[in-house]
Image (tube, rainbow, N blue to C red):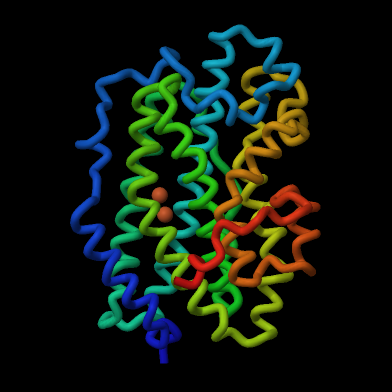
Length: 307
Ligand SMILES: [Fe+2]
Ligand SMILES: [Fe+2]
């Protein structure tokens, strides 16, 4: 019997998400104005989100150099986005094999994959137009199909989606940012909200059904895996290409960047605290890896996680 067949809340949510998708799905090659060149008329990300913001190499750059650096770092982020979307599509495709076609989740997850195909072509188009190297992780995608593996996989999908959502929301609202970058961010926010909703509903519903041993595997390994995602989000080749000595180490040690990571993961870590995956025992590990502050913030998520 398929595990998803026993997840009524996930099925009901999928039905809503299918309806929402049919009302509001965008085509990046129709809904984004590609006639505007991807040039250095403006920053490509909000400057405060750039990994070197406020560091000595940042202070040494002229404004045009800062903007060019933002173009490279944005392309690296999009390249990582394509890698992440490839990984999550593989997870979702494997999950589909276990879901009866009569379950609304089957239809919704196919829509989600179609969304990711469009997103990756959109990210790729920006990269092709930006005149930088085609940055991106070269690591193979590791997949695990055990029951704890699937819960972990959706947790990692959620981590990527929340982190990108944080960057995208700041980008789409920022008038200092290049208009095409803002349009991409806005399209992504709109469609990813549905993916986040699916992943949260699935995780919250499947969590209590797992064996205690499977749950323990998730609790024990999630922090390191999320830290791996954060690590892949920065690409040392950006700093090397721009001749910024020790750029990757300086970026990782940058308190402003470290705060951005914690803020970018806040929706994920709030949700995981509500579900119980981050608890008193595991929180120090998350804090040591720079994923949460040492002290829990007052939960803004209580009551929503399991709805
Ligand atoms: Fe996406
Ligand atoms: Fe997604």
